[in-house]
Length: 315
Image 1 (cartoon, rainbow, N blue to C red):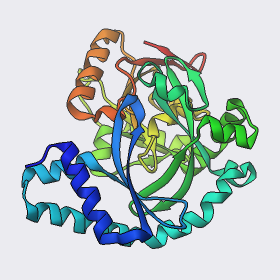
Image 2: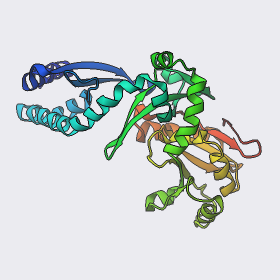
Image 3: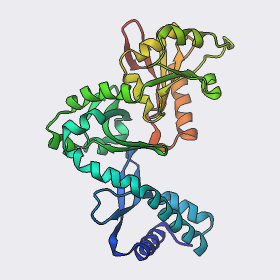
Image 4: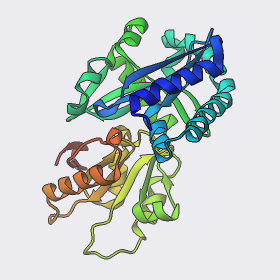
């Protein structure tokens, strides 16, 4: 059985032997959301400007379930098979990557997402951002979308300098692009379970309002609703979309508590006087620690949307 460092070295050595001199293999530490450092194995074909990444911690966890030669070989074969499947797609991405230097090409693909400010101090020194309460709006480029998900690149300070734009320039294009590319999706917890969701971008308010209010529930239990986007990726940013919270609030005829369940979605709770902000904070902390990967944490307290002034504040 090998410790993580030895496992990594052995994996790199065997991959180099299998792939030969036509490929460059290296281990890279990448700073992710909430100051998490991911150890990645990068495979790069010579002449290509892009390199698929394999998360080494995941591979090591697979190895530890059966720490022997057979499992190690199985991991290597899986990595190579996955790389072969991606090679054609990555080839197309490689053709596009040089265009990332040109703002006119990328500006229609710039989107935004929300991250926690306090938990991302180091990352925020490296990327353009806009403060939003105790959160930060950061930007990324959507490079391609496949059945496996979307391929993105985080916009960093050096991109902003090459493009000769400001963080507010990025915000202006992202606030237009993101709702168009990733429309808001609003549904009750019950609807999510049964797959009956409503797309705010396609349905008039009065239609989905009627559906939302027909749901039977016990009055003693506050009903939770989910706000995300149609892809379910970085969906907490839907609270930034123009008119979205207003529509949700009007549909429910209540002001709203916003519970940041993850970077990918928020929970909306219609306001009731009996609900205490500290109770909600306790609920959020429990959700974060028990159900949400550390990388996806957004905040540990609730926010409040007041429809009278169309404004979000800390609860």
